[in-house]
Amino acid sequence: MGFNYGLEKKNFDSQWAVTRKQYEDAGISSEAIQTMYDYDWSVFNATRAYQNHTQEIAAPSFEQSEEAYSPLMNKYQEAISVTEHYRETKSRFTWIGEIEDERLLSALENLKDEDLEIITLYAYEGYDITEISKAYGVSRPTISIKIKRITNFLKNFNFNATN
Image (cartoon, rainbow, N blue to C red):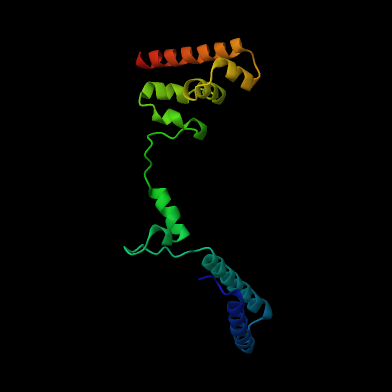
């Protein structure tokens, strides 16, 4: 449950009214009383902030479904979950994560985003060179040259990785 500011502030003020009277009767200076009040006020605010920003993490019971977990428990569950993928890839290029050849996978991960986009369109999504050139607004030979350059990079990367 959250912090009931109105009730807690009312209790704080009434308690401090009594405490202030006791301090004045004891002969403590008003500056010292104000300093003590300021400290207690800062503790009050710190307690309020703590209670407003803290949630109880209730351990899930067997009867409880995952939907009934607190939002904090759900975040915790996500944080400790193990993912299926060996490597995370850029979201647009998730197909790369399906490649089992480690050398090819490393080579693809070293490509620029633009090159990955072209190779995704060409090899994975099945667009031809003409369609890609129209999408990029460049000539067919430009796309052909880029695809050959990417292919050579992948071949050379794999060759250099084995030597």
